[in-house]
Image (cartoon, rainbow, N blue to C red; front, side):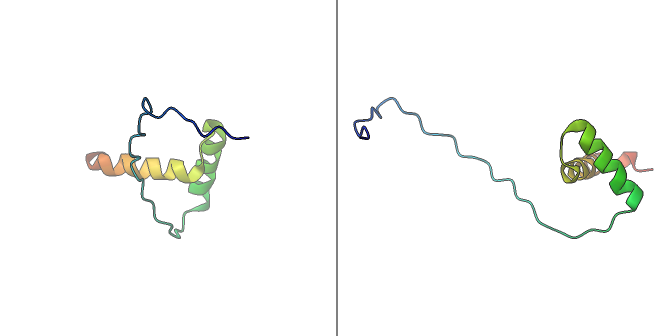
Length: 67
């Protein structure tokens, strides 16, 4: 039997979650580049796509360090 007498006077509402928007794309990468990201993925425990995204974000945040 389920208890239906819940005390809600002290319950707090959850804060709204920020929606992280991502778009699925197809991209061609050099085999060596993909291999290095997959190797980094195994070492860090993070997905290689996550690492590629982070690298792109870092590059876009620091355009002066381009070459």
